[in-house]
Structure formats: structure tokens, C-alpha cells
Image (cartoon, rainbow, N blue to C red; front, top):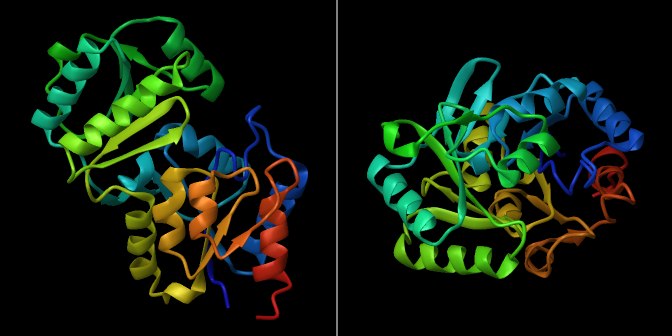
Length: 265
């Protein structure tokens, strides 16, 4: 019996226009009413996940920054930050390569330049940012670095490949075609789910994990039932037990009806 559903947000329960289908909201409400814990595990910052958490009327912890931070309300349950020297080195490399960097520190988003990239990112997600020269920051408690290029997907892939090779102990992944995420080596979505499994005293086969992109592969691998969205990447579909419908087709709801709400397995 599934007791916890660990779900990605963007592309899984939230559409590309950053809205929910009503069926998804109703399904999550039903799950909660039946005592199934629904936990959001996202690459987003904690602050930008809270409104979604509230809209879904959830009372469970939030996993943010790819799993680097798990909070229940204001209480921090799990946190893994980037080493300050490594963070500085990655920032300087990205600047030399003319790749935009979002810096997340103490759950505050910093950008060095108030330009179209940071405005597009923050406007789409309705989050605030602080414009600050990164050289003036101590880089203590860096939750995550996000490298962005909205105009050139190949540059993002190049950044990911270079950084993975240089820093094999970090958790580095593409979360969209335009985003390269750089986190502590114990800050994957899978790490967050494993923590929650222990926190709630669950067995792995009591957890269903669902997502759509390559950064969700660790999430799926931490679940007893692994579900990929129909709009997911080929790589995540390859590790899934089941491929459900797309986010536009309410694939999340389909998976919940199959494995949780009407399950006969």
C-alpha cells in the first residue's frame, strides 16, 4: 500500500503556463483525505514552492533545491549546502563563459545583473531576487547554483558536461533544456526521499515517486513504484516502472488512480 507520494512539480503536476488542472488539485485533496502523504520535491527554491504547497492545502514537508533542503513549515529537517570555495569557482567559471548564474543562499535568490534572464525567470515563478555583486558575498549556506541560457540549449549541456567532469562529487544535472543545477553531492531528489522514508518510518515499497525530467531520475529510483510522465525525457522513461499520460492529460491523476486510489496490486 502506498503511504507517500513524492512528486516533482513543473511538468508533472504543474503545466508549462504554471497553472494546475482542477483534476490534479482534486486528486491531491483526495489522497490527503485518505491519509496518503503527498510531498513536493522540487528544484525550485523553498520560498517559491510554499504558494504551491498552500494552494494544494498540504501539511507535509517541502523538498526544494533538488533535495538540498527539506523543511516543515519554518523547521529545517534536512540541509546540504555547497562548499563556499567550490561555489566561488563555479561562479567565476560561468562568468568567464558568459553563462548566467542564479545564486541561492539562505533561501534568497541573488543575481549580479538585473537583465532579461533574471526577469524572465522570476516573473514566470513570481519570486523575488536581490541584485548583488557576488564578490561581495561570503557564500555561506549556498543552497544551489543555477546556470541559465534561455537562448542556447547546447551551452547548458556544455556547462553540465564540463562541471560533472570537474566536480564528480557534486550533484549536477539539467532540470530543463535551459537550466543546469549545481548542488551538494547529497542534495538530489533521491536524497530527500530517502530522508523522508526514514523520517516517517516507511518501507521503500510504500513510496511512489513521479517526475518528468532527468533531474527526477534519483527521485524515481528512491521510490518503490517509479512513474514517468508521458511528457518526460527518454532517460527518465527508461528507469520507470510505468509511463503515465502527459501533464496536459492529467498523467499524475492517471497514475494515482492506477497505483494508489484504485490499486489492486
